[in-house]
Image (cartoon, rainbow, N blue to C red):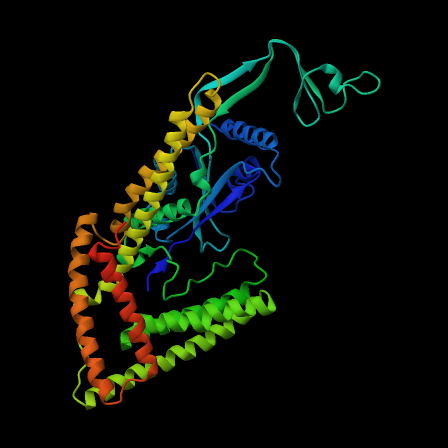
Length: 472
């Protein structure tokens, strides 16, 4: 099973402090390089802008000044590529795709087992022309920074200006706007998913050995992801034990597939013995991570029982000279291609929804006429620009999805997918005939019949989608 890439996104309430931490040779034992796309003062201006906007909004909680990606790199990169080349490649890749400023640092952990990049990026672009407003008369601000009409409103009982209040004199700058609005795309789960796929593809282009290629972990997979053990984690031993059992499950899944077990049967064991057990446990006892090991142990046992049953079915069929149908290489590839097709469908659905939103905002912009709606038009135009960028990026990712799996174009993938689907349907028909004949001899138990029913329902849905009646 291919290894999963690790790319993590976090919010930064103190961007200057974080930059100082990741870029300081004093604070980082294994700091190899720092790469910046702009001057360092940019981040001070950005922090000030975000804090001012946050204060004006009246929102509670912490102000988010920037965001940070942590990107794990293959250890082979240390041998094959100059460090500054690697850091510049990954940083420029982000800036070219999203058009925002970045600062990044290349590190190793203390034991030199985790080669990684910290990439901090701005959610705002700098305005080409700053907006500077000059006071036409004295302006008064209370302790909250709110503009008040008269000086009297900021005086105490002795006629003195209260602490925290301020006065901006006529001719002085009272507002300076250097940045655009935040790009809301960076807050979405779709953005993180896009970044994970984009960087995983970039890593795979650079790895010297095909065996080192990575994949993005897909939720709903038969497999279970392992957890990263951070530095000085007090639960390191517990996580390591948990990871070991996850690897046992993953290896047993491989064995079950090779033995001839249907994906539907494996997924059902995972759902019943892991997902549902954990949900019921949380509802009853609260979060008890230590119980996960027990549920996983039981799930592996059930999986081993399934493997034995599959082997018995095959052996019994052979005794009766009822050979189980053999899948062609293309039919065997169908399930994998179907999962890629689902990704394309999901991405297409997301694009469709985003285009609907874009159309709605464009209509609002067209209706925002008149001399008093300048501010509203500006806000709507910013939304339109952001949505247009998102739609373009999402459409580009359609080809990125298939390239991630070795196809040059979407057309090339669709041709193979349609051919595989045809052969897979023929194979399923042969399997159903085999089941009918073995069932007549009493070889198929209730579990197999239930799996057969689920398979039929899934195939009917796929037929419905592919016929055009279920097309959007």
